[in-house]
Length: 406
Image (cartoon, rainbow, N blue to C red):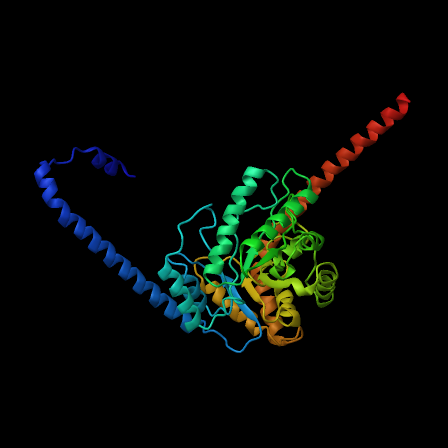
C-alpha cells in the first residue's frame, strides 16, 4: 500500500442519514450483483475462447492404444476437469476430487455431477478407465496415531465416495508414512484402512503410487507395495501407479532398454504386472537414487527422452492412464506440447535421426539445470560420507575402549 493510499484510508468518510443509507442500499446491491454476474459471464467467455484455441493447437489423437494425459485443474466446477483435459488433447486426465489441502469441502452440486457426466459423454472419455483422481496430500492412512488416522480416513472415504458419485473407476493414493512408528505395523494399518474403505464403497479401485524413497515413506520399494497388497482382502479393488521420476529417484534405473526391462521384470516378480493400473510420466531434476521427488519436463532431466521412447513403445502400458505431472510453467499448453511429443515417440527407434535430434535438443535445454542439481547431490553425498566416517570412527574408538577395560 502506498503512502497516499494509507492517508486516504484514514480520511473521515462523508456521513449520510440512516434514511438515505436505507434508500440507497437496494440499488447499490442490485448494481453490485449485476456487475458480478457480468464479470462472471465475461470470464466464462474468455475461458471458452482459450479452450477453443488450445483445442485447435492440440487436437486429441483418436485410435491410440496409449492414453496419455495430464493432471489438470477442476477449479470453478468439477466438470472443468473434462473440458480442460480435452483442450490439451489428453486421452486421460487426473484431477483432485476436492481441494487437496483441505480436510472437508462442500458436497458436489447435483447439476455439476450431471454436467461432468454429459461432458464425459460428449468428449468420449471412459470415466472408469481414463480418469485418475489424485488423493489429497493430507491423507496418511499409515499413521498409528488413532485420532490423526481417523481424520485421514474420513477425508479418504469422502474422496472415494465423490469419485463413485462421478462414476470414476480409479483413485490414486500416496501410501503414506510410517513416521516414528514401526514400519510393519504402519503397513498393516494402511492395509486395514484400505480394506475398510473397499467394504464401504462399490467399485472404485485404489491405486497405490510408488514413492521416491525420502524419509519413512511407504511405497519406495516394490516390496512395500507387495506387502500392502498381500493384506488386501479383495485384490480386484487395488492396483499400482508407477511414477517414472519416483522410480528413478528410488534407485530403479529405467534409462536404457536393458535396465528398463530388468526393472519391469523385478516388478512382475515382486508385485505382479496384473496390478499395474496407471503411470505418472515425469522426468527427474535430481540424479539417480537421490531419493528426491523433483519432477522435470520430459527430456530435460536425468531420465532423458530415451526413457519415454522406450516406455510408450512398451506393450504392458497400453490402455492405462498415463498422466503428466511435469511443471507447466505459465501455461497448460506445456502439457499439450508434451502429450504430442510422447505420441510422436510411438513407433520411433533409438536410431531414428529425428528422435536423436529431438533427444539431443531437449537434453541441451536441460543441461544447465542438471549441473546445478548434480552439484547439490554431490555436495550432500560428500557431507553424508563424512558424517558416516565420523560415526564409524567413534564406534571403533568406543569398541577399543571397551576392549582396553576388559
